[in-house]
Length: 187
Image (tube, rainbow, N blue to C red; front, side, top):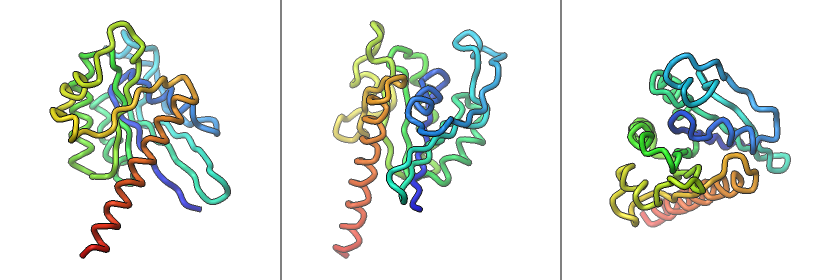
């Protein structure tokens, strides 16, 4: 069986656990515990280790989805999960500019450890206070629209939207694999 490991990272409350619950074909495994710090003002529970879900494509291919904790104090789990990832999604709440700096830190953390394909999922784009894509990209450090990863709107509670996000990631992964193969063959 071929397994593709996808990590879903992002700040607290960006929709990582919801996305995995929405798209997983198995009952997701989660490590949610009652939030006892400043996170409790945002939500009742928080992920302290990881979430896990799976999507099976025929008898021989499966996607394993790993959601990271959003709090930086659990970054040891970020390290563990990204080390075996084939690709990752940075999930960012479009309407919470206070999360853009933590998202940027998570992105830098992941990029220091891996160069696997990635995309940015933008949750809550329908919120009246949602920022435009270009401004979010700039806040995340992508100043040129030509040098940023795909930025895909997603409703983490809608299965079709979640599948579109995963499809975009797989397309990005396939394009990078093809580019690497072409580079190898041209030498």
